[in-house]
Length: 313
Ligand SMILES: NC(=O)c1ccc[n+]([C@@H]2O[C@H](COP(=O)([O-])OP(=O)(O)OC[C@H]3O[C@@H](n4cnc5c(N)ncnc54)[C@H](OP(=O)(O)O)[C@@H]3O)[C@@H](O)[C@H]2O)c1
Image (cartoon, rainbow, N blue to C red):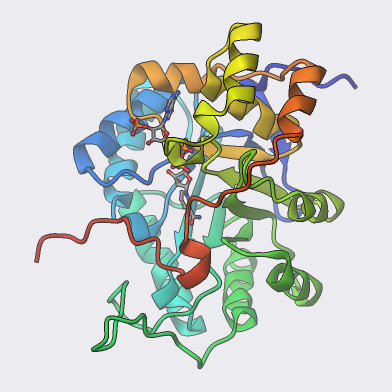
């Protein structure tokens, strides 16, 4: 079968668990509540059917409201969208996983999730404080729980039919391999930072070999400049093939065999980023040869993204 080069309708069958994930995903890491609602509705209007959320983003309620309104206005069924949310670091104790899941579901106003991810492999002190710190300002980790313990509670959610698939985020191969080996229900998805400056090729190949969807966040390098959006190879290709630099980066991310998350905040950008297709083979290879290496998100070091504003006290 010849694969379509138009990625707008591309869906990836999950090898573990049920469902099909639209390759083009919309991420909801948007600190402002009003922008969360408008951007989520704009994304739905532009054609996105995959929405990535997290309890840590503190806006599941706004995303849920935008989805409810958008689905009703567009005559779109719940089954036609794919919704993910994530378990935060302070809820890794197995007895906290089910309640955290239920609370996210309630905030989103949904009755099931397509995918539930462990947001990071770091366990923080259990409790309602998302960002527990000691008197020196250092993160308080929880040494009393392993990633395997938390995974067991995630598996229970699938057994109970409360979500269709489970996975991990911000994880490297060293931690993924043993978890994959020991898991009764294998991770369906791994969500990590990936773009031409951080291609994570070894992890991508492991995922492909084991039917795990490799889901790239920051495909535009979080929009940080200088970054991949201004890379001369990317801008030259964009001019040559009549696409924008963002469309080139998004096309590359899917063409290498993964899915992606992007966060356009306006209707115009939502349409631009959704209009994604495969690159000519020479352009794809040129991007693969970029040698600059840069990680933009430090969450993999501490589990703490650090750029989510705290609610007013
Ligand atoms: N698992 C994790 O730890 C983790 C961490 C981070 C993100 N994520 C997920 O990944 C999602 C994607 O976020 P991201 O920051 O990684 O997305 P991204 O798409 O790489 O970057 C978003 C930034 O790029 C800019 N941008 C968007 N479209 C553009 C375009 N067409 N041309 C130029 N600039 C453009 C935006 O600028 P403006 O602000 O000016 O619109 C925004 O600042 C998040 O929403 C979240 O769901 C997960």
